[in-house]
Length: 244
Ligand code: ADP
Ligand code: MG
Image (cartoon, rainbow, N blue to C red):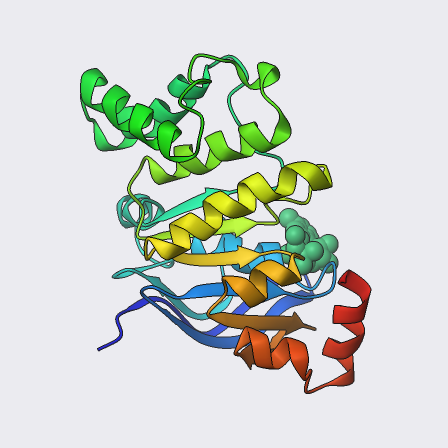
């Protein structure tokens, strides 16, 4: 019934002698909105980067779609097309307009025609509320607008899942809601999402599952509402008090 999209199988990730992920087992199924929380330095970004094969793993296996992160370079390219990634610092190409940023991936990766890429990019930018800003450069856009362009750009490769690494942390509080709203709409459309965030209200409202990473392990994995209202450990309780 449920289709796995991401499968961590006893995954160990180290940087030198430092173990960041310590035997992580986890299956993420199609349609889930998994919110990942944890102390700074606990390995949340590394966890996401492993899913996109931006990091190599030292033990176990990690399957995304039907591809292992331990496969050949050609298959890794296929794996990376399964997931769209959105970073804290937007990472747009400054010399390209919003429209050109969104068209870039499809033109490079899928080899679609210019006309088709443009039509799809325009539709995506309208979807994230930037129909009137398509020909602006990143420097002419607010942080919230830039992050919405980054979301449209990630969607342009038609990913099976979306990975978000603290997408609102670099934004002024008043600009956060416009990005969170776009993410909520995506979730409502049925997109599978893994979201690292400190936005606890987003976890409660939009998340279908909450994961607390602590000391290289998944310390808690369950319903956002239950974990937030009744934290099962002092560690989680302290953490939630800290971010609220
Ligand atoms: P988080 O996103 O939860 O703050 P990170 O995944 O960024 O945590 O980092 C987890 C740990 O791994 C930290 O101790 C960090 O210093 C270390 N780390 C991250 N990237 C590297 C790297 N490229 N080389 C060495 N250590 C790294
Ligand atoms: Mg991080």
